[in-house]
Structure formats: structure tokens, C-alpha cells
Length: 143
Image (cartoon, rainbow, N blue to C red; front, side):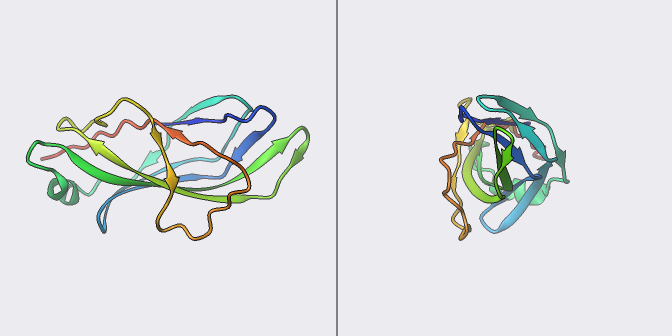
């Protein structure tokens, strides 16, 4: 599940498909896609998407001795803003954050993640101040 907050008072947001990827160093662990949707102004959205298979070998290698692990989560999408009856052009967003997962395979901290400009992002447009709050429950089967 992905939770997004739109703090704008006067602007709704049209999201294209939201692509989430999880990795550990250079190895891909899983990918998650949320289909396109609209989010009204001052609204919060909980969205479910489609998960591609988890790479269990990469997950097993990432686990620390205490059973926890840290994964990189990157989000990539394009958005348009709706201001009254007018829609802006699309703006690309690429942000990311590190996610700590405990020994049970659940995100270690209950607080949402505030994602920042991704290191791999070279074209993040900063036309608008956007705060993407993510609260993601990640369950991994560690064998």
C-alpha cells in the first residue's frame, strides 16, 4: 500500500502510473506499480498496486545479524496539476528513500517516509513544492 498526501489548497494532482522499485546496493529486490489516478486538493490517498516477484536471494543477502535490513526505495512518476478547470503540462518526479525493515519483514519505523530527490535523478523539476509522504508496509519472506 502507498499513502500519498496532497497538501495543496487549490490544486488537484493527476498521477500517471507510479513506479516503485526496491533495491539493495545494485541488486533489484522488487518492483511495485500503482495505476494512474487523480487526487483532489487537501486529500490523502491510499493506493494498492501490482507487485512483481521478490528476489529472495537478494533479500537474504541484505539481512543483518539482528534480522533487520535496509533497502532503497525509489519512486518515479509524472504528474499534472488541475487548477479550477485548467490542467498543467506533465512534470517528472523521481524521489527515493532508505527503508529499514525489521526481522519480521515489516517497516521498522511507523512514521511515514519523506522522500527526497533521488541520486539517480537528473531531471527532477522543482516547479512546485511537493511533499510525498509514504507509509509503506513491506512484507518480505526471508527464508
